Image (cartoon, one colour):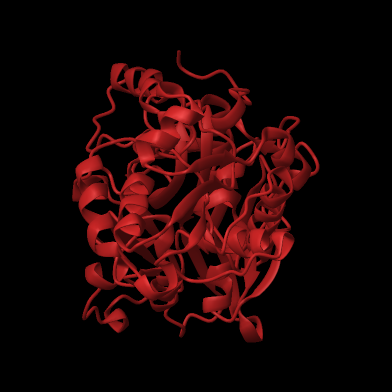
Length: 447
């Protein structure tokens, strides 16, 4: 998710958003969209697929406007149709408004019921539409009041980028469950709001700071204004952002994603001494942890799997059948590096276990002598309600099976998880939501 405000109206904000979405493509692959604000008038472009597919051949010079927002979708709520693609737009008393949302609301059903009872007609199944309607409904005293009132009613994880009138606005929920950062375009040409710092790098923008939990940031011709949280906020950044979701070159709330994963790998090596010939990774998110393991253990790091760079991330595909099909063509083995060797295979996490089962099978077929699977995070035993698409708890493999049973299911010689204590040491301060591992949710969730 990204928003651009160009202080010079001769610059094309839509073009910059397009490049930013490329950098953030790992955050969602189902649909892509952008909304351009031209003096308060909105123009939307969105479709199913990757950003490069949706906007192929798009002439952005035909989309004038110095403010634009963009979104790549990874659905955890709502259907997968183009109507639920974001940004969403509406007309309200304040004028035309467009909104993009990252996260998931835990009270989405009750909000929808309340708004429907008040005569609101919904056009999508997305919980993001409820946020948009609440802002419009309570915006009679201005956009800032509308957002504050909406924040008082919605519960869950949400990062928002909004444009209305002459403004670009960023919002982060009071727990800061997902990231949002502020960047400054070169030569004082304006500002960027982005889910990750990797998007700033793509736009040659300078990192300014992270948006704080509960904060509203308003950018217009007067510059950047911060609206402090109306209540006390306790940061609970989703640890899965660091474990898997964010790009390794991003800095999330001051933490290097690459370094975090590398340290998780080193802690794995400290937990258990495994005799092996090579440490290898499930690419790409497992690579930093595998490097950390190799450095700490002294066992050489090598490549055993080659990733098809034209394939997306299998975990965030919406259906299990799609994930299974994707694995077959996503990863190829390097037989010369594998045959006859004892391997330590590092992955970022084990959620369903089906992908690793297939990978272990491919490595066996390539002649691996032993395969010791290591997960650079603890057992995923609880569902996420905040925007990570883990299945219902009873379908999680760590709930269905013991570690020994999981090891046998995958066909591995051994299985090691990063312990919760090791993860706590890597995290340092208790500023993270680790509910998928320990069940301690930062707020009440549906039963």
